[in-house]
Length: 357
Image 1 (spheres, rainbow, N blue to C red):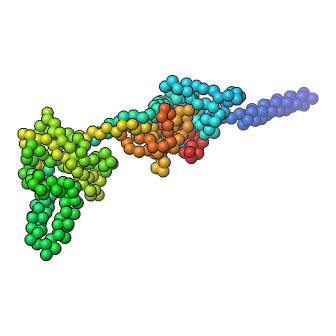
Image 2 (image 1 turned 90 degrees about the vertical axis):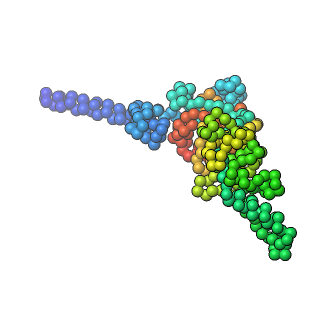
Image 3 (image 1 turned 90 degrees about the horizontal axis):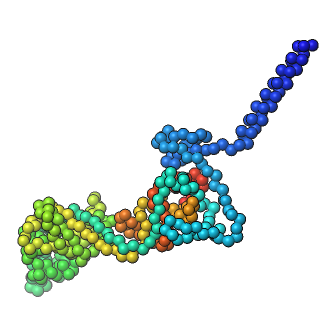
């Protein structure tokens, strides 16, 4: 009898333990687990805090993207850091707006700036040398001789020869006006092989095709050489060659600088500095732009804790600024630092949809 009672008690205990275990399992399954991810490697996730095994960066808890609306029918207005109002009305919000707490923004180092019209200065330096150009000298002297004898040799078709020589000079970088100056006695072609005369020197520079839109005849230049480190030789761009070097992706820039003491000698090396004023340009810091290969994206801050991906069209790059042709308006605030981390967070929450604007 006693054995039966003990067995009954044991069965009851086992039943209670089994029920407790089943309840615990069911409760654990019903509770959503926290997910932690690496901001730099968002494909790595974990169910507990820790560090990324790839970059050793602290894992960040993935937050549910819930729409915490106030239930009010009227728009609320919040001030952004520059004193103007964020538009947080329902019409201004999107299902793909990214919410980040202030603490999280600080932890990943988000910084912002505004799109505004700026007066910018484009500056570039070009490897240069004092001209020594026997090829151009020969072409000029041949053209001068052909023009001089054209009247006497008209019946032999010298007119065609002159046109061919003109084409050759244009291929070597001279404009029609420069051809006229060099061959009418205004300039002596021997300067190209013996050095400048009349207090002038010719400078050849190599500029990259990315700077071609800025380099125009008439712009001021400053030539400096290690031979005379304390002196600046100022002048102007005279012409830009028409044929691009396919190997170096450069064009030759021809300038003329003042050299009253005839210090500059043929093939002397130096550097040309060109500065161009570019006024009234709608621009943002270049660091704000994410180039996906097919489009360019910026993240705008539309509220203290809300960000939105916007596709833009860019123009000229005037470091550290980039011209904005479309997609942004003045005074809109864009993320300029930790943009990649913000984009990674958006991809985790929304997938590739964040770049579909």
